[in-house]
Length: 120
Image (cartoon, rainbow, N blue to C red; front, side, top):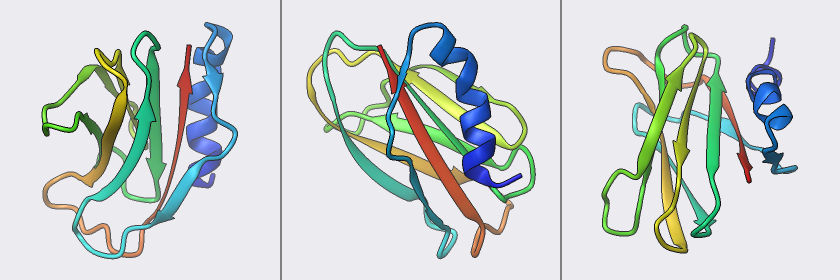
């Protein structure tokens, strides 16, 4: 199964719980062992889940999210083998940085990834 198909499958139960899934997914290829950084505008008062999947071996992907001061704002995270996720309840509206990282010891170069997010 492709990373986008895997991550959409993980998001399905959250859609049933009332999350709206962003229609445009993020995707790409790990070009080195450096983390992939994405920036996203989030709004105070909303709840967000970000889910990612990759062609890395199971358990080797992690998703983190930080505010503009570099402080982690995750309130919950998950790791389901080939898919990882993070939930956030922003205390203020602003631009946040989402970081996809391959866990220590993995060699991500060339691995593909996909990310979707939902909000309510």
